[in-house]
Length: 271
View 1: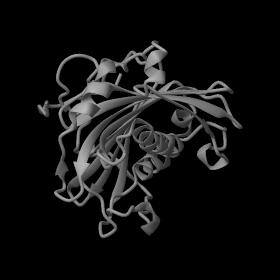
View 2 (view 1 turned 135 degrees about the horizontal axis):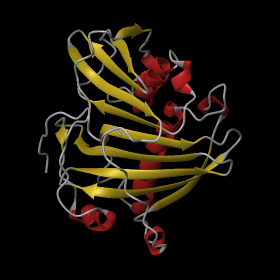
View 3 (view 1 turned 120 degrees about the horizontal axis):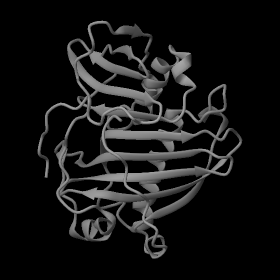
């Protein structure tokens, strides 16, 4: 398995009533599924982003903690149910730091889709361009579901492309950039879907775990290259600008028996 197992969803219904666990229902739109009616990774990513803003608004933290940047996102697509479909969504904090937190989201569809995700989110100050400390009211509330201990950043994926990696067509568009000149997270997942489409036998396999780690900023002025390398049931993907790594990605299919952290390198303390 690439990375670590995901935390099980809290079962106490009072956490939903208190807003600690955010619950919602979302519809899978036609443009979010592929030809096999599997929900696409970029479609999942958009649901994750929308749920984050909705959770902040529902809990009263949209004004105090408005800007977040994803450092890593994990998406486990365990079952694909088809389309049309409505997903029940549950969102909560699984680990807490002083300026960042891990957020878990489960998506369960009425047609059988099952998705589990986790993202390392950094609370960001757009004026200074640096991580910003989380308020005590925020950590007190959302930290109640977090596993004990400090949250440390540890990359799972290598930033250097394999010498045998091949180029995959990738185009960055003006519509991919938001008001702070930040490339939308769903665009990276679209790039991963593009790379995965080059290997049809992998594209249709379930269950699958996909990981993206964002390492440097991507802008419209850049000329990004999308590179992919297959290693058995694992696909490694990189977005590069020259020799600079923008993002490292990986997809692993199968039953998850691969030795954990086989791709991990280094450890940086961030608490």
